[in-house]
Image (cartoon, rainbow, N blue to C red; front, side, top):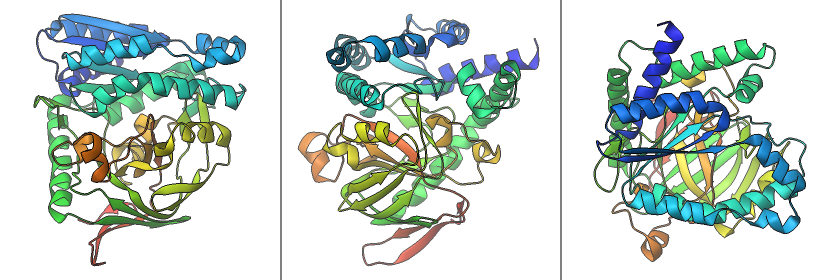
Length: 408
């Protein structure tokens, strides 16, 4: 077996054993781009070898998406398969594991009317809410694993022939996920320990807010009452550890939805529903993004932020060191799973219950400062020029990052 096939096998094994931590007899519901069919078959094989009772996959197809956005009647864009997501949510709450194969063409929908894309995305967000709620509540184990989609490879390596670009992207994926190491599972155990040490440090400090300072950014992010930092392997409500993201380099928590002030600029592009959004700028007052601009893709972003009131507030803040393995590649991946783990980031929209003590819901969640929305969109703000301080309520500062690197 050549090195590529060995590493691909290791990645599939990681997805099932480390990402999902799949239990014997458990069902798996997978989603993937149609181009990933061979990789999905390998994931299915590993899942069944590990004791899965049923592996069900739902494929997406960019060609069909473009057909819909080009040809469907206007009112048709307001429809989404709510019946499907209600069924998925039911399955998750009954114990099925969630496996998402990530990797798509970030320019798949370029040239289509932004208003039609935005309208369809809003309908999708509304319909997906039951499944999203089950995921954000961690009622079951879930993970996201990357696939080197040809369109993605062309975006990351635009000057290379497609076959070479795909090969290079797989190499970057294997490096970022530690699949190219001799014992990837042991490597992930060590990585999770390091992330958990940062989590323990931050949870012990109980900071009132974080202050981000860098080029174009002067942002104070207040933290929710009784916030909890998370990172790496995370327990479900039933206590089963899973790694939601392969790869991951972040530690993250919940902002207070009404305590974000200042200005912030994105440090990396955002791939949003088949469109690239670049040069994002936002200004916050009392937690609300009163001004949002982008140099490219602004209309698509605005449409998303019009989904509901919570879409213009923050649901996540994450710290990621600028010297991590993904950042060291020097690549812009045009994919949130990778780019969010290359740089500190914030997210518009829904907050996670896991980031609040006791995992409250409903009014208790809102009272503590948790944000509610039909969307959750991470965008990157960190860089080697970013400083981050932890702030206590009395204004005392503790340096956390200097020039994008941990100092604790």
